[in-house]
Length: 155
Image (tube, rainbow, N blue to C red):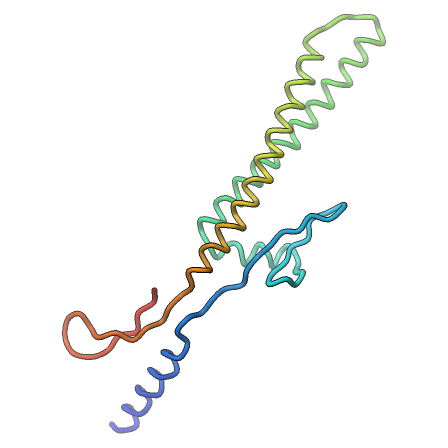
């Protein structure tokens, strides 16, 4: 009985000493050819970066929106290239077709909008993750609301 009491006191002391547990701050840095992913100012791989980002549901949702926008942007770029080739063939054959020119302009503009949305959502995802870890996770010992005893509370 006394050993159980000692173990409970020791466990309570150890857990209460870990009052604030903070996560790892994330950052995306743009390089010349590619993005570099950093965690606490150390460069990490994209897989580890995404694994850490997925722990926050709100940030993960924003990251998924960014990936969807990126897919739509690349699709629009391919369509714009197709319209551009079609327009070039029409011009080289002395055939005037405004549809190919308008299609190329519209899909290129859509690609630009989707790429901007991609960048914005990625930035928001990282900022949301960092904002949520700044709150921290507090582990406190409090009296029970009903009955006698102590409880460990995660906040």
